[in-house]
Image (cartoon, rainbow, N blue to C red):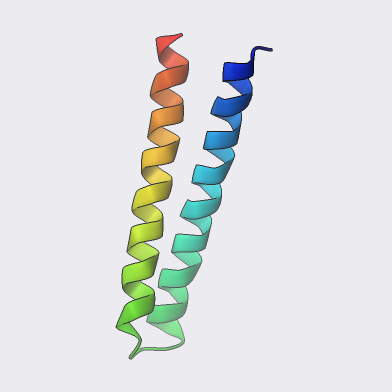
Length: 64
């Protein structure tokens, strides 16, 4: 494996972790703490960052 494939795998794993944490954060803000809008915003930001990371890893992998 090349060094670039290690970086793509790392980016993919980190993106997936951000997506999972974002979904957990949104779930907590919706079903447990109804009044906490900050958790919802942080969850949406984490979902966005994770999705961008996963999409970048996917497109860079397809490019090679």
